Image (cartoon, helix red, strand yellow):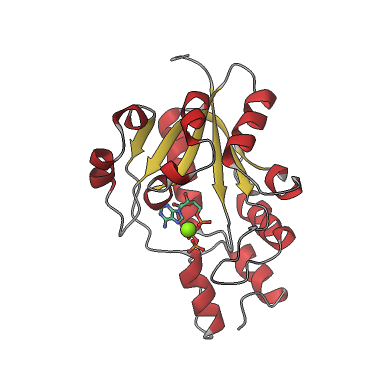
Amino acid sequence: MENARGIGIMGGTFDPIHYGHLIIADEARQQFGLEKVVFVPAGQPPHKKEYKVSSAEHRYAMTVIATASHPDFICSRIEMDRAGPSYSIDTIREVRNAYPGYQVYFITGADAIAEILTWHEHARLKSLCKFIAATRPGYDLEELRHRLPADYVDQIVFLEVPGVYISSTELRERIATGRSIKFMVPEAVESYIAKNGLYKS
Ligand code: ATP
Ligand code: MG
């Protein structure tokens, strides 16, 4: 499969989507010659998070708006429309079925790849796709390379991206405390957030 055509999956809560997500997706696309990157907003988290996650419809709408201008970025509702808890492995299987013969790459930041061993059916995951682990300020990819089991590291390709110190958590806090998020998210996403009164505490 070395010369197979590639498709990327960019999973996330996207609450809200920001330039960190868009930059790693586009760097991955370019570096690995991916034909498309599919953005998959996560379904409503089953377990309580430390904050109330926005509705899947709002998160999906922001993802569509943010990716609209990129010819190779598409969005998928598969996780949000799936009943019950949402697992990456089901999403990877669905994308494999939709794109037979393609090499599937699951794109994550350095913090998310660190949790790989806690994912559902993680042992089987690695036979279905490769992982792209992008650098993220504050997380040490090198340390990770040594900590993860060798058979995992073989399935992970490491990707250096321009460091973006933005997180959705920080954006939510900024909005809740009346600070600006200008130039951290696409302008249309900023407008959508304001129009719908999202993240106001
Ligand atoms: P939160 O603070 O709510 O966790 P987040 O900014 O981490 O939000 P997620 O939706 O949790 O965004 O992340 C989706 C994916 O994007 C994850 O794989 C995460 O590692 C990656 N990612 C998010 N922000 C960045 C960034 N600034 N640089 C590199 N990777 C990032
Ligand atoms: Mg996160």
